[in-house]
Image (cartoon, rainbow, N blue to C red; front, side, top):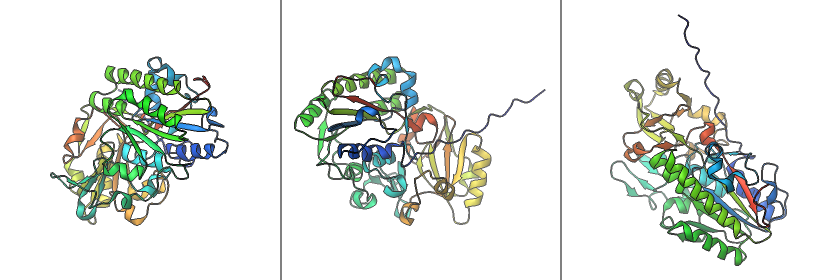
Length: 389
């Protein structure tokens, strides 16, 4: 009886650093405000803009939007809707938002994932900015955010960039790390976002940054089903409202930090043959770092490849760097935050870290280099009444 053909292993989507990548968006928009011509990957309606509102819809991948275009007519009809750009590696919020605001690749800003190795094998949770094992401690004094992440946000902006973001984020270490001293305009409910943006535009602010996390929260809690569909329709109404209050000469640009993959209960507990050589796990379920015991890197690599090579890219730290996934060669102190072997699944699975109990409850995930996670929309709507290209 003939055997079924083995599907070829897909190629990862490598970030287009310096080109059509989220890390290039803010520098390109600020250049436009200084009179430069937009690069070809930026939507054409941005040319000549005198005010820009950049709205980041956390967790909206280009594939998810394309599959639900009828639920999001404003987004689907915007200029540039068919031209996605890449996220960064790993395609996770902490890393991607920092590249987006600073214009720096992960190799430079150093926030290379959700959970990073710190001194004495402690683990820094970047989004919460806490450190430790079972008992988490506030890490803002132990690991000063602006020392760990040296790249300034919104470099070269014409004046302060006000950030419209959810209430409660202002005091976090991650906010300090990726937004620096940017003034915040916090919102408690979605309906007030447009009020804040209208006031900022009327006051003459030339660049405004809006962060909305609803899609990502719903995807993590419920997956990419009807709850996500309902939230996408709500996000589309928000975008339409923001576009409707633009004065002539202003442009609303919409993008995201990453997309999503439904994983659900498909969690892989690492086998003993792999863990025998591992002293520490960091990263996240779809970009899991294995920190090997001294002298055990080759054994961990071989065991992980044999066990998981048919479902994941299994690569050493050096190979990840050489293949350009991080956009350059990290400084030694940044490279030390990484493990020795990475498990980056291309199948809809996640590699579980038992020490990170909260992550085990996520329905939809991101972090890997699949098209669903790496390709995000880059759209624009102008203030002259034109919401289509």
